[in-house]
Image (tube, rainbow, N blue to C red):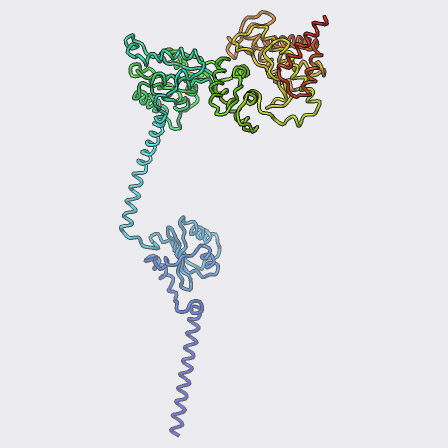
Length: 628
């Protein structure tokens, strides 16, 4: 009995102990299950402790970085317990005990979260605090001190370095002309073809460099020279030849050299240039395109014009250096002398204005001989005199380009040497343009009209002896659908009234031929009318060749006064053109058979030499004389 009782009690104790253990496990499971379900072994401390840890040491949050999208996902899943906002990041503690940070350099993200809290009616289930002193990674003291000192030093030195850099750049900009200094050129006056007047004028400068003591003994100074002429006439080449003849150094620059984007640099350039020139005496200081300096004006245009005025004033001051400028001769070149300041052109600064003219027939012949002689492969039958006659009014630079173009024409045709035909073709390219394919778009009637038009020019020129007819063609070239190449027999500077009337009649000959044959003119005479109108207006308004004998030249009037007077001049010009046009029509009508004969042959051959037209004219005259 005793034995059974003790055994029963033991069984009861075991049962009670088992139930107690089971109840304990159940209670612990109920309490710990939410945390163990997500992250076993991690226990989230109270919220106040998390904030305190953030304030004390933010290092635990610095080991794991996430982006803003992860933080937003945790907020939507109600998994965020606390957020600590610093100057450059957001420290995040989740409900499962995880810690990470989100970079927020500008603070925009934290501010948007705060605004969202203010706008939302529902209180967020996380706490957000501002941690101004929290740092993800504590910075050593020596680093902080170095950063402060470096920032202070940078703030102090940056303006100084900026000023030094600007000064260095401006200094470099000022001295940017010294490399233009050359040794004495090897070019001589004999190497420059033509420009006889300019060479004579420059002989005084040459005499000064050859014997400066004689000039000093007489109290003289070397003349400063302005070379005036169109583009390509050889002004720069003359200046180099002068320096070569004198054995002087040569500084070459343009009028635009003194302009700069930095205010005040232009004046410093002027001073530096004259300093270099005085240090390299004897020297020729050549300023090409001097009209780029401009004229002094009032300063109503702003600081730009004021700077330009100061540059011109400084140049004038340097040119007035007198004794300090001994051995420095200024030579300027310009196409537009009227654009130079009047004080710049006065005697004492620019003593002499030398006009460099276009070469005459003889000079053009020598220029062709010079450049053609440089060709390694050329024909021996090239007539340079004929080429010179075909290039009336062309500059030496244009002649050099023609010789080069002839080489291109020869290469294009597969020739092994440059011939006279290639040179003549190059002249046509220079005067009129290259051969075009416009004839493909012209119908037969248009080609016939062009033939009458060009024959009208050629026939009037041949009958009147106005120039020399070199070639007649209906092949398009450049913008011309055909052309009659008429050159001058010789270079002339003076023309009498009858010669100018003949020029007008030649210009109107093409339109007159169209009127004679078709009864109406075409738009192809537009350029002819433009040239004829310009010439006739000059005749009646400037040259005194008008019907009423008015000798007053409108060129003497200021532009704003010439307007009312120009109306009468235009009326007189139109009357002159009408009279010349009537005479032209009568001339063509008397030679209608000759016109038809030339047109018929031209349409068959497309191109006729001028000599053939003269043969037909002579034959017609002989036949007319025999009939009479």
